[in-house]
Image 1 (cartoon, helix red, strand yellow):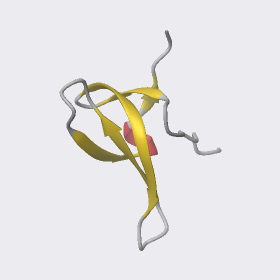
Image 2 (spheres, one colour; image 1 turned 30 degrees about the vertical axis):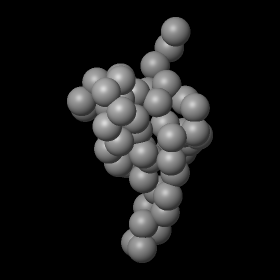
Image 3 (cartoon, one colour; image 1 turned 180 degrees about the vertical axis):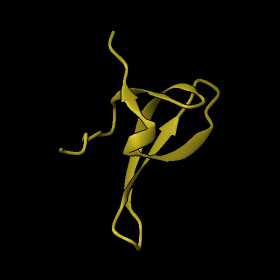
Image 4 (cartoon, helix red, strand yellow; image 1 turned 135 degrees about the horizontal axis):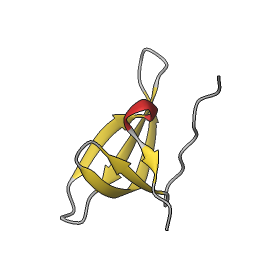
Length: 56
């Protein structure tokens, strides 16, 4: 099984709603987290398992 790769600019669904990936970072443990900005401008970080691509 391969991990889904997200990149800045991708529209995604999070547990909190829809947003846009604006940041990608590695944690000290080696996992990737993705910064997602929602429509209110709030940025939250999620692992790839909590995100799914939004299809237009």
